[in-house]
Amino acid sequence: MLATAELLLSELVTNAVRHAHVPPGQEIKVRYKLSDSHLRVEVADTSDVQPEQRAADNGDERGRGLLLVDSLATKWGVSPRNVIGKFVWFELPLRHVPRQPQKRAVAVP
Image (cartoon, rainbow, N blue to C red; front, side, top):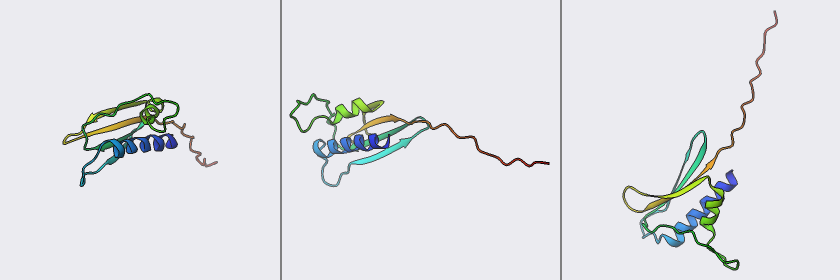
């Protein structure tokens, strides 16, 4: 799951850098939220332009970022920021590792 999160984060940050045209003095921000069931990653920028998923041709070197996000994330979307801009987010499920019963020493009388 970590490798998938890193790949999708890289795609969203790359999209923000290439397409959001963030003005000087503004920043692209990344944050994550971890719950019991999933990891949510958000990439915020100051642009109101919505990202568009497109169909890349076989020879295209670009244009597959949101296709990857759509294919690998459980959910993803775009939400407005409170002040200016938007954040693009995705969620990945956490794999639950069954808890191993703890061994306890038992005193023998």
